[in-house]
Length: 449
Image (cartoon, rainbow, N blue to C red; front, side, top):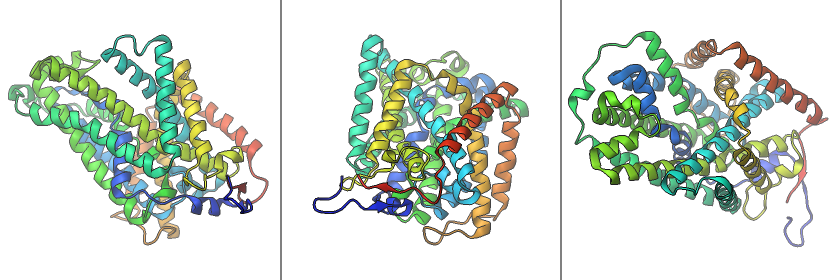
């Protein structure tokens, strides 16, 4: 609401951006990327990758990290050149215009809301494994409502509070994994890590493609771009710190799990790390990893609650959603209505369980989003766009975005016709909404809340 004694001025998109508080530094943004990327998947991927590659599973992580590194570099340069809130939505829209930017925002939010709701259900299941009955029936519904009411409350108080919660959650979720790696290295059986020979290229490629999505999350974590301090330096540094840490963590977790369980690892599909910890350290070790999985998912939910509402804010800021979602609280400097709206949407999907239809969109939507952002990075450099000071420049010039596009097109070539048609239908529906809600002229204006 307006300040006492002051009129309620009309604010354009630029005024709305300036009303946000730039409080996120390298530590906070890197923690957010780590938090969103290292979700529940790390607790189950070791068994899946070992089933395909055996003791050579670690190679898939390295191959995937190199491939995803190309995409990340494009995000780093684009994020240092365009500082508007919305992340990929802002990068792509700046280069290719409002419609393509809008489509990228749709892909981003669809990915985020589906993943957010899915992990909410996973969190309920994880809690239920620790406390039987706590994640079933009405107790499950109450748990989801309470968790998202808490996240909405914390993030509505200000971006700093949301960022602090993420930093605490990131440390809490990474601690069990760090302990697993440190103490697990002492008890591994070297024979279980014996080199099995170079895997087939096709097998390595399939496993690496699966792992691309274990590394994804940066597209969501960068959504609060308008609240990042000195983005031309903060964004690339935070991305670099986070991606190196993620790659090392994934490789070491895979090696330790393989070293403890050996050929048995693929059979523990539900909780491979808990199985390895139980084998090495007894029941207490397995319990620690189960708790770690719950904390990891809780941290993921927290990180997404900071990032994803900013996409709704950006849509409303540009006139594609109701203006109320673009209102920024003058005291806390955050888009409270967008935060609440996102929390409600995720709760509805998570509680109803009717979000499975979105799952088929996730892989293709992610790759399409990465494709648009890689192209945007190329064009932003060509146009020499500099909105946040001296930008980060990708080593090698335009070669990296081109290679990124080639890799993404290769991955997209593996999509089925049904998946492509499903995505096409979703984008057609989004296009209809765009035509109905498109601002008649100029940027949207809203009254400050």
